[in-house]
Length: 213
Ligand SMILES: [Ca+2]
Image (cartoon, rainbow, N blue to C red; front, side, top):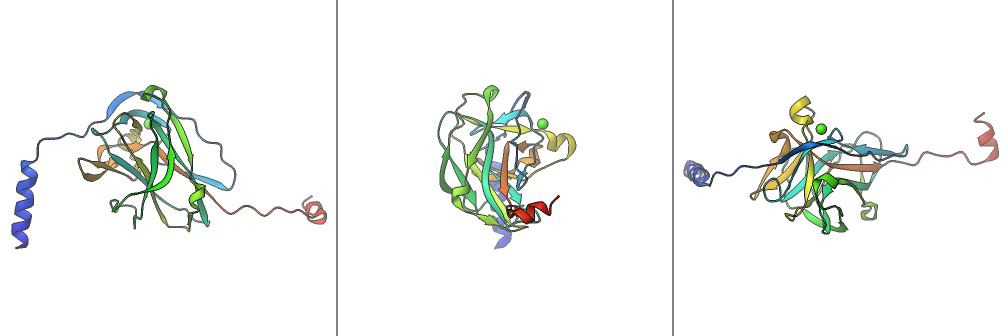
């Protein structure tokens, strides 16, 4: 019975129309990095320059970056950064992914919206979305899957450092109803997160301040 199911699946696959997932090549566009406080850590896979971009439906309908909380913490998820263009509201989405390489199961909206506010890739910028109101705290090793859906009049920057240098991140993209890793196509997406760690203890009494000198 199992063989019959596999055979049917193969036939169904062969019968699918020839589709090609396509990104758009451009000259490199550089992003400006966030200036972080000492208690913040920015998790990123891209190298800050984007050699192309992906749109819906040719490249993605939903993209989620997946990150692992570093040692230390506990960490509060404070910001999601998208290198995007588009003029409509987009909702930050998350998924309860169990590990880095498990495809998203059921992405859900967080109720937090952002609007890139730029019409095309040439004017795309980093859009920093404050998600601290979610109040999500992670411990070292926890997995964070976060991203957004695309409407066809928008797009996300694609960095080719994965193909060029092998520095590949974990970005899942839903294309033609299926989940695939962008690293399989040689790209990292313009999607980062910022975690805020424990606030360093400040010495506030006079004697404690004096003892510092
Ligand atoms: Ca690059």
